[in-house]
Length: 292
Image (cartoon, rainbow, N blue to C red; front, top):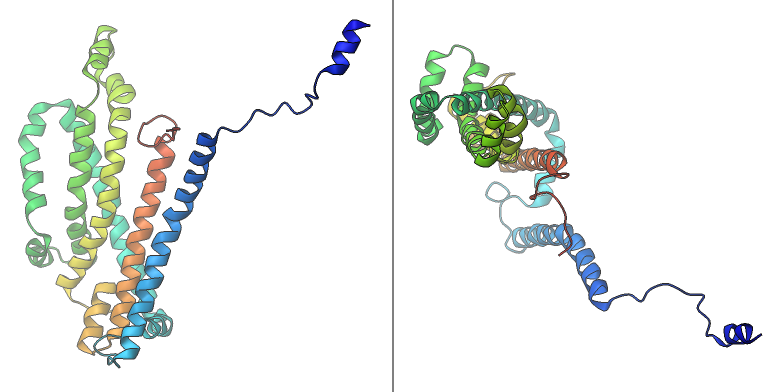
């Protein structure tokens, strides 16, 4: 009876939810604000810039052949889409082709460098020379000696995109932990096993970093090569459309082509960033989200 009386006198304890820590609540709220601001702030800055641009053109009656407003650029993009879209496909084809060739060649040569210091010492200086020589200087010679225009454009874009992948992958392969390499050697692992299970995983973040750089550079190389080639026709890319529009003082079309090039570069970088995150998010410190 006494136990029952004591139980009846206890306060109601139906709600067992622990109290929310104010510091944790502030941290969660700050994280939500950061996630929204990461996307909202760039959009607001862009909208403000476009609005200021439109206001300036209208307020000062700037001629469209000097500085077209955003409305004229969008109008030209829609009106000339049938002309700009095939040119964009050509430029994108050159860009992605050069990036794929640079990836295969850069990773393959980096693996050779990792397997033999003699090979690295013999060929790496020439890769540096190829990188530091401006492609706009080499491009005219390439178009003289290479009969195919598409092949010449690919070579020019490949030259620009090749070195970041080669140098980053080589650095990553050489950055594998020496203690782990000694452990592999102690257990009798072959060169192939050490490369596959230790050095390649260690080089993956470096390779992905170089790939993101090379993605933008391959687009730049393709555009520069198209400027140097300067030939029109069905195989002409966006760079020639810009040249053609400048000759005709069709400035809105120039801006529309530049807008397409910028959007293409952003999409390439964003796609490679997503790929990097997906490949690293479960194990590498650069992609793992931790509570701070």
